[in-house]
Figure 1 (cartoon, rainbow, N blue to C red):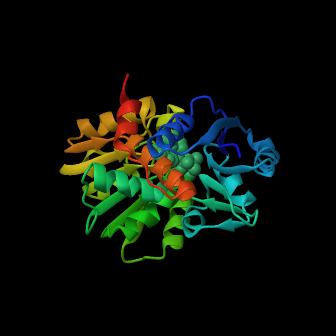
Figure 2: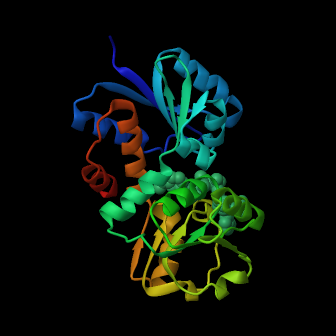
Length: 279
Ligand code: NDP
């Protein structure tokens, strides 16, 4: 029997770190697998994904812009996928049905708690963004015990919809966020933790945030990494945050979660992260 087949779907896909990460984990755990990158433009995603799984594909990571399509294609959805409304992992089950899963929430919490020792219990947290990543992360933050979660998004309605879905009125509220100035954010006070789950950095768009959000004992974390994370991280440092992180560690943890989901063994992630950070 040949090695099990896995892939990552996205469009564009050449930049994806997934093949490198999964190959590292496989070597570390002594597991033989074939892991490719598959370009899947959204209008052809269904056809391409179905063909992959029909030809013995076992699992796939899914990245932009196909995460919602992956969620819709699946026959079953884990609770994490249902909460996020998008999927970053597809798995062919023994009975042939496709399962959608989402590792973003768990991956972020693991990176924050285990790698960076960020306290979440009883903390006051601001979450910027209400897209797929923010949805996954919001649930995970509540599970992790944050005291107060304030949601702010360019489109207020999306923040409101997320707050409604979370259904924790005593702990979750929304703030207006006026993109041309401070909107309601300047009245929110300072936070223990500010998470940027917008795609502004990836899109090269500027975000205006008041410095009053940052406490000098607080932490700022951008889910993006590389160049895309630089503007938010620079803003947070300039505003006096005690600690500032990017989302590369989260990416590695989410990849490790999908590896464990498929192979039943958890790889070590520090070595993979060190390699990715090497110039
Ligand atoms: P989505 O497209 O689902 O959501 C994008 C979000 O960004 C929306 O809330 C959108 O607001 C907001 N946004 C877009 N442009 C701007 C802008 N100019 N100013 C303010 N807000 C803006 O993307 P995802 O949720 O999938 O991804 C969000 C970020 O998280 C990306 O940077 C992505 O790279 C990162 N990410 C990192 C992961 C990791 O493992 N490290 C995993 C997953 C995501 P609106 O609703 O108004 O459109």
